[in-house]
Length: 253
Image 1 (tube, rainbow, N blue to C red):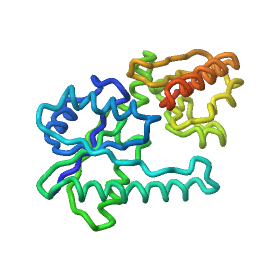
Image 2: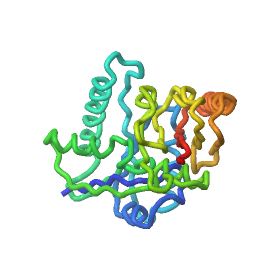
Image 3: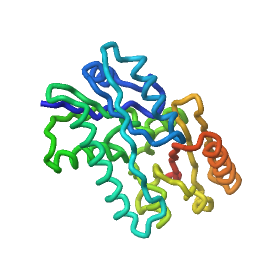
Image 4: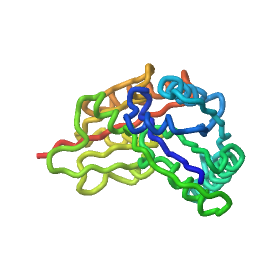
């Protein structure tokens, strides 16, 4: 039977790979890599660099064209569901066309497959469609938030306090109750701008673990918020894409 791995490859540094990840890379016949167009070609090249560095057996790379997505939908959840359905169909097609019943394939997942990533859900969706059978295994990786706090030399939590992972879309609805440390992912609109009056500290990072890494931190004043926003905009224009996250910390008594 076919075997599929969802392998976490870390937040950008090839040295983020675990020993387990390297072991699984060397069991793979075909690597499926999402192609998001020329704008994000760097993401394909980084995956190819990892394969060149760690894989010692013959393999093939199959690019999977990423279906288009509505970035300003009237119904966000419906638009994401449609996009995931199109992705599942694309995954199913390449598995059937590129992987024999005795071969092993893999998806190289940025960060950790269990954290704000759709790969596991998409693999389950392919299985649910019933047109192709395979076993699959998830290999954890260093997440973006793990890499972020390591680079800022801080911790994820304060002693005995809760941590919350959220999105910019949810943070815009208000600060979560009973939480002092909030990690924000998928925030295209710099939602931290709304919280400069709350005596917070921000730890922000973009392209963490890559040669283009940018780190900024300190008390979240209007001046620092402006600096991060302008730095982010300039970086996105320079690279054509940006991958960033941040921790907002409210001091405990």
